[in-house]
Length: 284
Image (cartoon, rainbow, N blue to C red; front, side, top):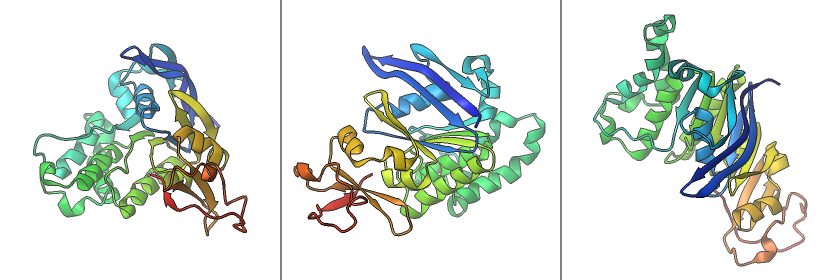
C-alpha cells in the first residue's frame, strides 16, 4: 500500500537532549495509525515534525511523494489538517465561527463552494450544534475539545494529524471522534492519532507505533504490538492484555504495581485463570 506520509531517520534535539532518535515511519493510504507511549516518549514531537511545525536535526519527511519543505505552506494546509494538544482560543469567538476557520486554506478556490456544507458536517461530527452560537471562552474543556476537532474536520484534508483528540472528552465523544476519523481514513484518507488510552488504540488503530525514549519500540497491528511484557517494560508498570467479549483486546493496568509477578502476564494465554488475578484497572 502506498505511503502518503513517510519519515526517514527523524531525530530531534531539545535543550541538549535527543527527544527523537532515528525514527522511520510510514502512514499508508486508508489507514489509521496510532502513536502510543509513556509521557515524554516523543509522540507529540514526532507529530509536529510530520506536520512540518518542527524541523528535525536530521532526517526527512515526504508528503505525497515530495519533501515536506518543498510544499508551499498554503498547499500543505490543503493536504493535511493538524490538531495539536494546545488548541486554546483566547478570544471570545463564537464556536461555529471557530469551526469555520478550518475552511481558511480553501479561500478563493473552487472548493470554497463547499464551505457551508463542510462546516455543517463538521459541527455534526463533533456534536457542536448545542453550543455553536456560544463563545468558546465560556465552554467546558470537553466542549472546547469538540470545537477544535470540528475545526480540523471542516478542513477536509486527505491526511489528519491529531494529537490527543480524546483528551477531556467523555466516553461517547471519545468514540465519536475516533469513529469519524477512522471513517475518513477508510474512505480514501489517512490519519495519525496520538492516544494515551491503549484500549482505544487497540479498538481503532489499524496499526500502532509504540515509542519509548524517542525511539520506536514496535510498529504493527495492535495484536502484534500489545504484548504484555513489552508494554510492561515500556510503561514501567505491570500491564495485562486480555481478550474482550467481541474479540477485541482489553489493556489493563495493575492497580498494585508493587506486585511484580503481575507484570507481563496475559490472561489471553491463560483463559482458565489458573493463576490468581491481580486487581486491575483500564490503562489510559
